[in-house]
Image (cartoon, rainbow, N blue to C red):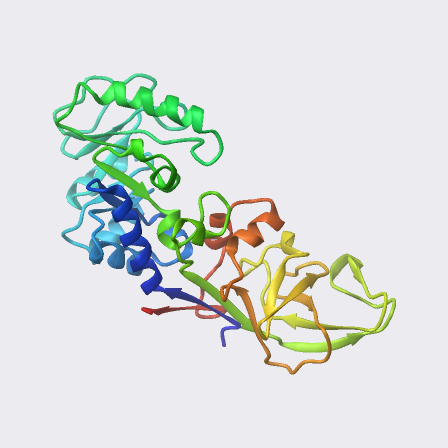
Length: 339
């Protein structure tokens, strides 16, 4: 039986989609559903985003695009990652669009030429004359969440490069840019993290009118009393200084609850409690105020406990937290609600 459950609130995703479309003020929203929609389920997330007005789905690999094409036969699907030459045929057959970062450019596929304006990742240093099958010109921001001046320089370079090709779609904006840089709007914006109610700035999503979409819940599998001097977990990282009740939650780093989340908080019966000791592959310990019953509910993410909080403890970003959750019928179920 599964030992935890991830719940995806599609209603929240609907509202986030509408929020972003309103901010775009006429530019198209393209929903980024790569990496299984940041751990939220690409098929369901993509369906809801399209129903609410998104005009395309964006993925990283041809394989992701092919899987979605089966479910969305008429939708635009754009593959943003590099494509191996052996994938060109299947890309064309499935009517996928492809971002390209270097010549030679494949024929017979709608192409988005990618200009590197400062990200220092995939992209061309200079924009060549677009081939006849080009439909778009694109780039990607590096620092909207941290260095506005550099983002503005990227924007200026992109605007100058695409000015000669008004017949092609232009797109550079990500979630952070849509929320903080209105001048970034061209034909479309590629939004991922904000769709899922995760803040691109690591703050409370509600500050930008977003609702977290994912919740993750389990329960206490065992409760025990540690005497002074007794410990829990590998390496004895937590040693009780006084009689201490702990609860063992049957979720660990194999499920995506990371080893570096020692010290994070979870909700036990609605109250914040500290994770203590080393997180194991299949469990972690939480300090309790007293003896509680086995089966007492535990919220790992949700009910006001944000993925952003775990990210700060782990010194990472919120979408590494959600993409790391491993849904499996054998360990962690994923359920969808539309509330």
